[in-house]
Amino acid sequence: MPIGSLQAQMLKRGEHPSELDQLLAQVRACRLCEAHLPHGPRPVLHVSTTAKLCIVSQAPGLRVHETGLSFNDASGDRLREWMGVDRATFYDESKVAIAAMAFCFPGYNAQGHDLPPRPECAATWRERLFAALPQFQTTLLVGSYAQAWHLRGRTKPTMGATVRAWREYAPRYIPLPHPSWRNSGWLKKNPWFAEELLPYLRRRVRRVLSD
Image (tube, rainbow, N blue to C red; front, side, top):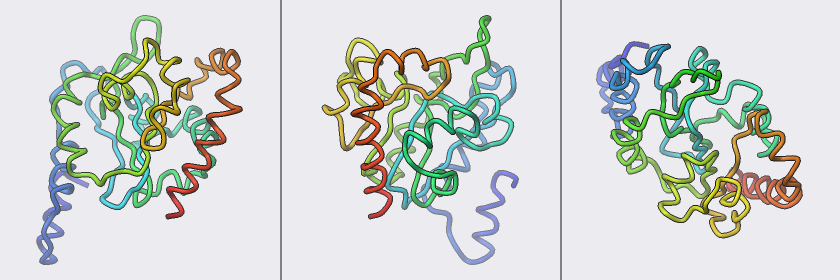
């Protein structure tokens, strides 16, 4: 749908775009980082004024860039398994918001790994977006970039240490490692994650989404 067409349709029906609708139109039209994005800009986020649970990660990957659907890959399958939800629930914007630290795929580095999220994105949009969104009952912070921004100086020296200290942040925030296959070694070395954190995560997600 072309940018602005949603507002045009709403006005035609005698409706007025909400603050969030107007902001999302601006976000999806953003070309601020275009010169730095090898695959071009395609902001991807899923939010609403009714969602109770938020998922914050680093930035979209290539498959997300191509499909326009967050976590539409093997890492998403693992994250959904961690949460104990199916795809229909995960992508229900009325219940679950997904807003990465950067909304566009940043490309790959020389080793073939995803580049960090472009900092311009959070600096330009993040405060405004979260001011327009509801107060989430729980926010899942996937990876160090999400943890650093949302925990505001309360993180530990490493991402693993922050995740291990999850009880300090729950229930409002639950820090998680990225569900990428590259973290499989970390998961094996830290069995407490599956034994202690994941059962709590599933209970908390179930409670939030059932309220």
